[in-house]
Image 1 (cartoon, helix red, strand yellow):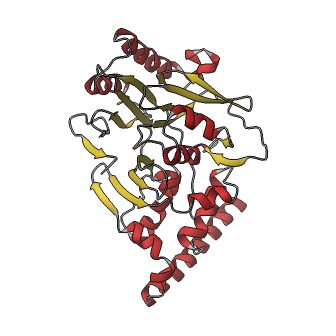
Image 2: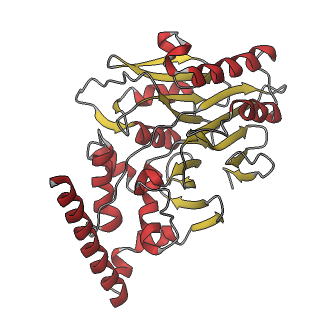
Length: 357
């Protein structure tokens, strides 16, 4: 009963905040106060209403430097509290709660020695937003966010002003992405759990904020590992994670967080178990089968795969039935700078983005 009263109270406070904000907007007084946010939401568009799929472009880091300077965040709730101060100016709460991506990733090179990378994001529904970030200093990137990590519902879409304001938070919760230097990163759930962080005097980062950091500031795997070593990395969504990171040279690692330590494990592919444990069954039967399939493809071609072969590898490990299904697949090619997406298992319909444009 107390929890229900608390939820009703939160809804009431949110409603009051929204009402005040709407009054400000109606009076014309919010134009200056929300000028940065209004500039961003003008660049949110619907890519496909049926999927549904949205696109957002952000010029700058939207206070990410300030976020780091203030100590970052060790939980999704702390990220939400920080963003509430900026996005809504405290008028209504901005929530962040990451879902657990049960996914697959593979990295290779083509016959020219150029990097090719692919990733499946598997979950039980999503509202994907493609987020292009162009920081003043650092690397431009394209990342993917699931809007339900902000709203808690796949029924809520960034299709009105208030929800578009919430969508700004997507910059802080990328599930995966590629930057203009060719650095690729994907967040994957670790089914057996065990992600622990030793609390030190370093700045805190949730796993998704860490993903944003390396997209903005790292060009190579070496730089990404060194950069994250300066922070205490915490789980998001109450689940364990590892990060698969690859760069333009084809170097690939999976960053794992075991017994309070960050362990870079050299591997061109990953699914949902800790590679440090060397037990592919630990992530469950589905994870093991997907891992063995990627391993087989990579070994058969000695790590040399074309764009189409990487796509085919993702199709082969995609999940189209059951509760957990492939929400999107993505393939990046260093050769063309092309980033291709396919959604909900429709591999005949490709959405193409260029990071440098």
